[in-house]
Image 1 (cartoon, rainbow, N blue to C red):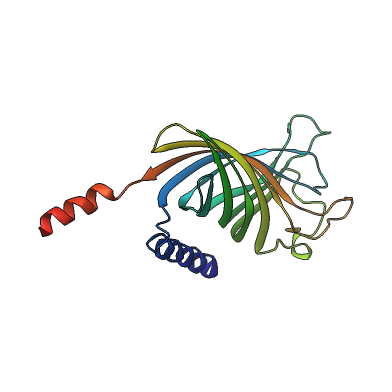
Image 2: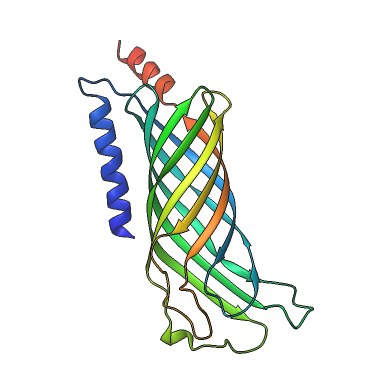
Length: 215
């Protein structure tokens, strides 16, 4: 977690220094909220996607006329949920995973629409694994979750105005977050889709006011 925070802070400092240099590259800062549907692969019981929340901050650097680079620091929920508990042939498994996540995204901008892609590194901060049957079909201590999740992000979005943006993002683990469970043919990966709303924060007015006060 500390490494992710340090990495994010260093990214902001680097972006800010670069943006103030001779190239006069523009930088932006904002907040982000999201609602996602997540699930996992390689589960021994039937599940359905689990609704989760995501929230955080982002800093964006314009590197050309059409391209921007964006770094984020988010708290994001992942996992999966059981299916209809009233039917015995469906799973009753519930998994909650919480992460601090730092995506590094490259964005192509075309008028009011943008497309983005890039990796993300997440640190596990909390887990919860439950079943209505009293016992899971495997020993959880023998199959711990990795404390990191390395994912790939692919998304698109729309810019409404200078302050508000709406995006849709697909995420999928590139490396397993847990070794293969008994009775399954796939390793365990996180995957999901997130609908996000972003708000750009501008400090120009406060800076101008401070300059006027100094004068």
